[in-house]
Image (cartoon, rainbow, N blue to C red; front, side, top):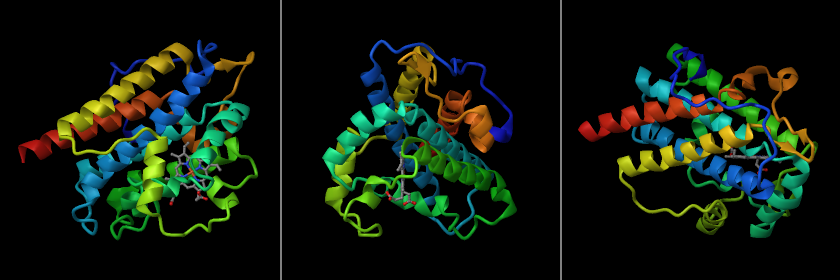
Length: 262
Ligand code: HEM
């Protein structure tokens, strides 16, 4: 969680306002895909904590992990959305609509098992020990609303604008279309492999941010998503996206190590 204070000095720094990427289309495509893949892995890590006994209040270290994963997911929402709006509509959204006209985050197979956390629906979420998690969940809802409005101002999602009604059961076929779009192949992996996959993607995000900054210069100007005026609760994630990822991965790794030893 971002409020906890302790910061790992080894986390690389990056400029918020960066330079022109060498390959614009590939940079934003990479961000869209990897930002989503990291979100999937963070949801999986959360499910590891709550999946077995969703009605039992998690331990303090588990609550820290949940809050850190939610914040890291919020950071990935911002990272994925740094694509200039026009480019999003002409390239990314267009490609998503070609995959399926109603494609939606509601089809994400890893989200559904942890959806109740994001809705504050698990019975223990009102406990005072869950305050930091509650703040992270509120920050996440604000971030998703914000980036949706930023990229598609006053517009419906692809699901809402398609003829399919929201709330329709998500079939395995839709989940596969969604996975397929985000270049996600599912097979059993060990905990060590899972953490390695997470770390490899975070390293890629770090390289991209070090090279291009969070808000690259495209077409002669920057395209900020969250800024000082609008930022509010989300502002810490702008310079702190890598820190949020690093904190989550550190706690996931610690939990995995405990799990292996148990
Ligand atoms: C940046 C990457 C994004 C991710 C990872 C993401 C993720 C998600 C997830 C997991 C849900 C399901 C929420 C639930 O069932 O409780 C969802 C729903 C939704 N998202 Fe996003 N989202 C993203 C971007 C956007 C954008 C750009 C829009 C702009 C329109 C948007 C609009 C919506 C809407 C309206 C819903 C409600 C269901 C629907 O109509 O699809 N999201 N999103």
